[in-house]
Structures are given as C-alpha cells and as structure tokens.
Amino acid sequence: MTTSVFDLFKPGVGPSSSHTMGPMTAAGRFVGLLAARGLLARVARVETALQGSLALTGRGHATDRAVILGLAGFAPASLDPDEGEAALIAIRAAAWLTLGSGGPGIAFDERRDILWLGGERALRHPNAMTFAAFDAAGAALLRRDYFSIGGGFVRDQDEIDRNAADDPGPASPHPFVSGQDLLARAEAAGLTIAELMFANETALRTPEAVTEGLEAIHAAIEPEAHHVVHGRLYERVTPVEVRLLLQEGMVVILAGGLVPLPSRAAEIADPVVGRPAIGGGIAPDVPVPFRIVARGAACDEPGMPV
Image (cartoon, rainbow, N blue to C red; front, side):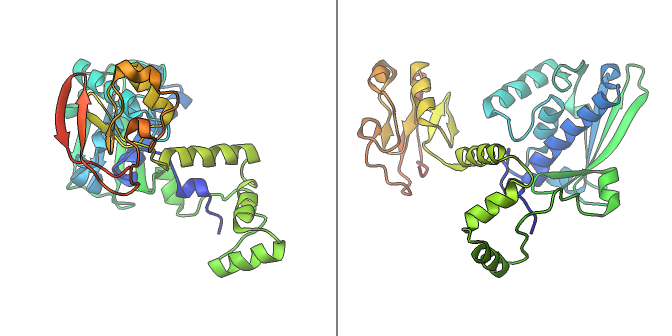
C-alpha cells in the first residue's frame, strides 16, 4: 500500500470532494496552465462548461461557487471561508474577476460564463468540466478538459487518457498489502504501526514536512467550540480565536451558555471549552440549545454538539 495519509485526509471545502474541491482545484490548474504558457495576460474571458453529474447536482454542491473561487486564485486546502464569501460577493456585485494571484481582471457573468450541460456526459468520466479562455477579440486561446475523479483528485485530459496510476515516487521502506501484512512487517522491524507509517511517509517528504502536515490535519478536524459572528454559525474556533473575537466586540456562543460579554473580555486570559468562565461542564456530545447574539441581534437556535 503506497497511499499517503495526505491523500486520505485533505483540509478542504465542502459539501463534496468531487463536486466542490475538485472543480476549485481544476479551475486553479487551468489558470496556472494559462500562466505557464504565457497566455494569462491576453485573457479577456473564461468560460466553464459543467457536464453530467457536475451540472445535474452542482448547484446543491456549490460547484459554481467553487469554480469562481478557483479562477480567482483560491485553493481548497487554504481557503478561509469568510475571505471566500467576501470574494464571491464582490465578484458577483462587480461582474468582474481577477484571474489567479495577480492575473488580469476580466468581465465575469456567471449566467453567461458557467454553462450547466446536464444532458451531456463525457465518455471518460461523469464529473467532467471544460475550461476555455478567449482574448478580447473572442478568439480561443486555450481549451482544457478536467475530470473530478473523487476525493478531491483531478485529472486533465492527458492524465486521464493515460489510464495509468500516478508515479508513486520513491519506494516505501515498509510496503504492505493488507492489515495482516502491516502487523507482520511492524513486528519484524520492531516498530509500532505509527513508526512504520511515519517511515513510509518520510520516503516522500522530510520528517518536518510530515509533522507539519499531520498537525495541520489535526487542527482542521479537531472541533473546540462553536461560535456565531454576524449571525453565522462556525463549527470550529480555537481558544485564541475566541479571545480575538471577544476583543473585536463579538458575542461568542458556546453550547451551555454565552461567553462573557465583550465588556468582560479582559477577564478571560485563555478561554478553553468547558472552563467555568464560559459555561462550564459542557458535555462533549450532548446537543443543547443556546442563544445566538451578534451585534445586538438575537434569536434562539437549536444547539449543536461541541
């Protein structure tokens, strides 16, 4: 088995790896290809054609939003939800989009520039999309097909036509083909399973890069609290972020009760879920009702597990 933990666990955007992460990645790759071929500065319009499943279920999976953000230079692993939302609002309001990071600005009307071709299905894969770039005279500069094959993985037309696995890179020092094989190899090498897997990962990356990547994955999936800002529910917030939100005048809501009001923010040195100062005794898996308050507006909402 040569699959990396970083292929199995990927920080990204939802609700779908194939219909959200994949299209965002594909859009970014297309902009990168334009830049690599020296065409980016000449682009005046980009058209995206979504086919098959991407078109039929794409609106519910935010495929259109993903494409727009990908063209604008955002990537699933590093996307800040608030920054992405603000960018979408600005792009839609101005009907103007800057391609990638520092690329040209182009007119962008998603009603014209995103095509929903639900009746068309590519032969290679049902999750197909085609990006096309045009110059100011309407001449085609580049057209490229991409396929979102699941798990956030994307293949372009050349890659999928090879019909072969990707180059696995350097050989793993402890390859295995089953759970039983893994146990036997770990015992023979005098390693724990974690040590064996770490050795396999460091065949592909430096130990520091593996550690940093694992810590980033843990930080992304470890829920510490729930909070509401401007009436929106966020599923994760770190203790440091709680303190910053309070200092910015926000009212933060956790299961079990309110964080002390902003006037008392200075009293909180290091807020942590479950401490008495912010509601205390929070059961880790019991949904409880809490009060949503954001800049003076209040409403009751059902609780979510912390």
